[in-house]
Amino acid sequence: MSRRFIIVLFFLMMAAGDALSQCAMCRTSLENNFSNGSPGIAAGINTGILYLLILPYIAVITISYFWFKYSRNAETKLGRGAA
Image (cartoon, rainbow, N blue to C red):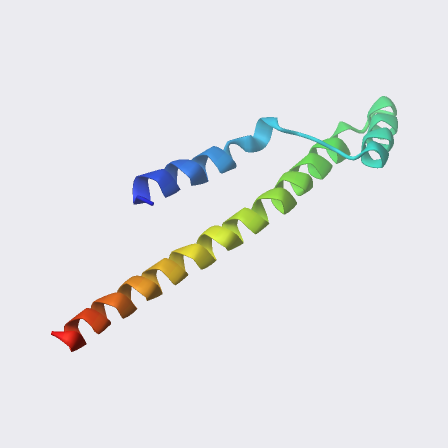
């Protein structure tokens, strides 16, 4: 994978703010709060959902990056030792 692909993928994940999804119970609770005149809670819940959604992706990308970097360094060291 090229760095450009990883950077583009990261920014696409960060732009997922329009994908505001909720479970049925959260949606019902937020609709009740919104109808009572409290729209701030709904925005906070949606931000929290997106935050929880993106954390596993960031963890996988970070671990993959370091694993790739380590394996590449190990391969280079192995190649130097054999020559």
